Structure formats: C-alpha cells, structure tokens
Length: 371
Image (cartoon, rainbow, N blue to C red; front, side):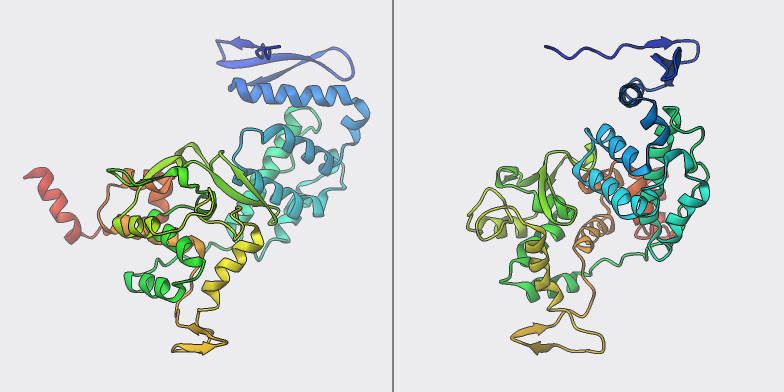
C-alpha cells in the first residue's frame, strides 16, 4: 500500500503550516511550523506521545525522550552526523541528566554538562549544545515541557589551534617514512584528493576512473559506530560532499600499480573494509615513525626509523590539500567544491589566513580589472 501523504493546513496570511491534533487530556490543540517536513516530524513525535499515554508524558526521563527523539530525527541524516548526535547523548547528556524527568531539568542542570566539558574544545561543546537545544526544543513544541532550559545555553571551551598544513618537503618526508607500509596509500589519497578520513575508507574501485580525465567519485563513507563497528553508508556528510575529484598523475600512477584484492581501495588483509582496530594499526605506522619529544634527529628503534619531526594527523592531509589549492590561486568556489564544503563561508572562514590580501598581492588583480 502506498504511503499516504502528510495532510496539513497552510495559512497563507501567516506563511505557516498547521496540524490539528488531539490533546492528551481531551480536546484539540495545534502544531505549527513554516517547514512542512518539520511539521510532519513534530506530528509523528506528538502522536507517539499521545499513543503512549499521559503517564509517560508526565514522567518521561531525559534518556527515554532522547532515545525516541533520536529515532524520529535521524532517518535522513548522514552516518557521521548520526554519530555526533549519539556521542553527545550517550557520553555527555545522559550521564549527567539521563535519569532526570524532562519537566524537572533546569538551566543549571544543562550548564553543569558544559562545566564537565570545560577542558574540551569549543567545537566539541557546540555539538552538545546543539543536540540539547534540539531535544528540549522538540519537547517544548510537543507540550512535554513548558519551556526549554537550553534557550540561553552557549558553548564555551577553548578554540582549536590553527592547523598548520604540511610543506612540500614535509609531505615528501612523510611519504618516504611510510613507504612500504599500509599507511602509504591512505596518505597518498589524503594529500592528493583532500578526502575526509571516512570518505577514503569508504572508497571503492568502482568510483576510481582512469579515463581521459582521471578522477575519483566521492559517493560513500565508512564510519566507526561507537568507535568500534564499521558502517558503510551512501549518505554523505552533506549534499556538497558528493563530488568528482580530478587526480594528478602522481596518484594515477600509484593507483594503477596497486594489486586489487577487494572492492575497497583500502581494505584488510581478507579484503574487507577496515575496522576501527585496523585503522588504528594502520595509522600506527605513522606515529611510530614520529620523533619523540627531545629528539632532534632520526632514531632507529626496534627496526623502525623515527624520522618525522612534525605532528601528523589524518585530517592534516586534507588541510594540506585544500591549502595547496588556495595557494595555487584556485578560485574559491572551485576549492569549496573540491573540499566538499556545504557553503563557501566554511572554506573562507577556515582558510582565510591562507589568502594573501596584502596591497602588493592584490595590485595585479585590481589593475587587470580596471586597465
């Protein structure tokens, strides 16, 4: 049987959608939203509460409501975004206020969650604050609570330090250091495509093309659910993450010489997708080759030479790729596309320090415009 379309009333004078619903105590009330899809989600959540009855409506705990809210609001989200929400709920929200009744949570209670995160970055706190506001905002809209305790909640924490991209020399040192290890392919893909970690691990050979214009299609991601179980998904971080990335000859030659043993470009010895443990073991090939604090020259220990005298993370590979594009003068909208950023503002805000806006560097652009 085909799914019935959601029916609601559109109030043209107020540019808003309205859905009338039965109240738990009798009579009727209305739900409103300017977005029809959001109103449908509110309606589904409200009806679940209605069917469960007044007792749950009055005494539902934060953990109970958060679990139900998650199920209702994540069906269309990417695997990475779902992971962020689960992480916020399971590691930060529920351990502090999970046993509290929704109606009894105060602004002080939610502030205490951030106090427990005081040593974490601002970006980490923002994810938790956003999740809290969405959960309690939905509860307010569905008449479970009179007012959300998160209305004035703001993330604090320290701002992450500005990442330093690798220089051309450092990139070569890194590649030389891990040559012959399982990390070499991952690093090549990171430096020459700028793909995110989950995009590299989810890459299959059917998305690698060696025709007239060699390119890689970004169509899948692989994340580690609860930092354990690998989950392959075709739901990307955003619509902008779906992109076709041209690949330079150095990467083309490298990929053509790889012996394929799996549908995955990067895989375990048995040809299956990476587990979290396999990824950690792969990246250990990098960390074992990094000089320790106090060491100023290459050191050989247990048959492994430590020659990398700078810090390397999986994300710094992507950061280096995007920085190189900007430094080469690539149009910022093209950089946005290749990076898979949803908005050009993201590209500009993160990489504004790379753009040389001194009068000397801008003179040529101004002269070409007005000459």
